[in-house]
Each structure stands twice: as structure tokens, then as C-alpha cells.
Length: 246
Ligand SMILES: Nc1ncnc2c1ncn2[C@@H]1O[C@H](COP(=O)(O)OP(=O)(O)OP(=O)(O)O)[C@@H](O)[C@H]1O
Image (tube, rainbow, N blue to C red; front, side, top):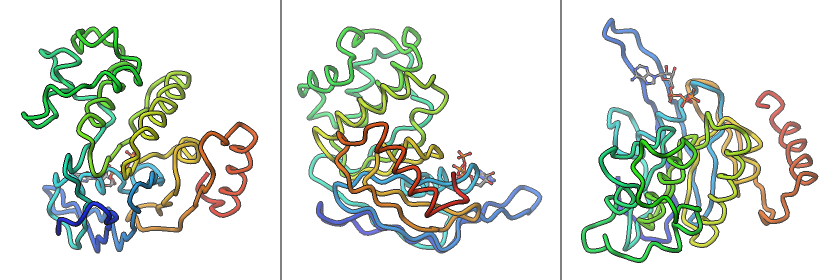
């Protein structure tokens, strides 16, 4: 894994990732999975359940080093890589604000984060503990923690799964607001086509396990113009290009 300059894309080239059970049974999760995410681009990895999306993110995060292949991550002066998982994973004995600041290097722990708390509607709950937060608020806190580090790349693993649709929709808009204020290269895992169409510049469509890239769907439209009618048109074009995915 080579550190690369801030202007570099994320490059992934995984030849193979196979899990082995204690009984020696092999499950091939990824095979010849290659793609790039350009600098400042918001990309979604879309694929069927169990195809290997989370496995891919775990490899990029360095949590799984047992694979064949390579990848290159963008870097920047402030941060390197930030992740938002399905579970918010906040420390229960720290307040929301302390949880967010703990992700920062010591020298930057006291930076002004008012803009971020404001953008995510967290101002009034900064001093609450995780047990006092709804799942929606905890997810917002996890987003705040990731964005506070101003990462060179942001990885998101279905951050809105298991929320009611109204809360999920509100959080998608909040994510777009903070991402648009400081666009960072982002790769989000989802199996929700509409979510991918709403958020992405580009959708990377994966096959069933073992995952490889079936193709790309570019959404070259400003996000403000993705109204319900435009979203329906996009969904139709997507299903024409990838009839087996929707
Ligand atoms: N630690 C593990 N040991 C054995 N098999 C595993 C392990 N982790 C994942 N797998 C298998 O690898 C495959 C890919 O799993 P992964 O979690 O990456 O899929 P996913 O695309 O993220 O699924 P979902 O959309 O349901 O979250 C699955 O068949 C899964 O059962």
C-alpha cells in the first residue's frame, strides 16, 4: 500500500479474498475486483447482499490484510481515512462531543466544530451520552466524528440501514449538506439503488459473490436537480443498464 498525494484517486485492485472456516471450507468473497474513485468524487459500491462489500471496506481500512492484490489510498495533510459503520460505535462513557473530538489528533482536539454540529442538527445534544441518543442521533454523531477529521477518504458502510425511511431520508440530505460543504473522496456501500442514485457521482455495480465490477453508472447531475421526477428517470435508466440489479 503506497501513500499517494492528495490529488490521487483511490485505486483498488484485489485479485482474491477467500475466507476459510475452521473446518477448512473456503468462501471466495472477492475475485478480480478493480475500480477507482476519483479525487473529490462520491461513489457508491452497490451489490447484492453477501457479495463482499463490507469485506472490501475492511480491507481498505487495514482491518483484513489476508488478501491477494493491492490498493492505494489518497492522503492529505489533515486526515487519512475515516469510516462510518452500520453501528455507530460510540464510547458509552463519553458525551457525544467528546466522542467526536476523540477521533481527532491531540493537537486538533479543540478546533471549532460548531459548523459541523450545526449542519448535523446536533447543537442541543452535544453533551448527551450515547445511551440518551436515538439511533438516528447516534448515526449523526458517527457522521460528525468522521467529518471532523477532514479525511482524505471517507468510507461508509450502509450508514442509514435499519432507520425508518423518513429519518434515513433526512440523514441522506444532512450527509449531502456536510459533504458538499467540504467534498472529500467518499466510497459508500449500499444495496439501496435509490440511495445510490441520490448521493453518488458514480455507482460501481458489483456482481454476486465473489464480487467483481459489473459496470458503472455515472450520475452527472447536480444533486439539487435530483427531484422525484429526475430520480424516477435515473432509476429507469439504471434498470435498463442493469436489469438484474434492481
Ligand atoms: N469472517 C468471515 N468468515 C467467513 N466468511 C465470511 C466472513 N466475513 C464475511 N464472510 C462471507 O463473505 C461473503 C461476503 O460478506 P460481506 O459481509 O462482505 O458481504 P456484503 O456484501 O457486505 O453483505 P451485506 O450487504 O449483507 O452486508 C459472505 O458470503 C459472508 O458470509
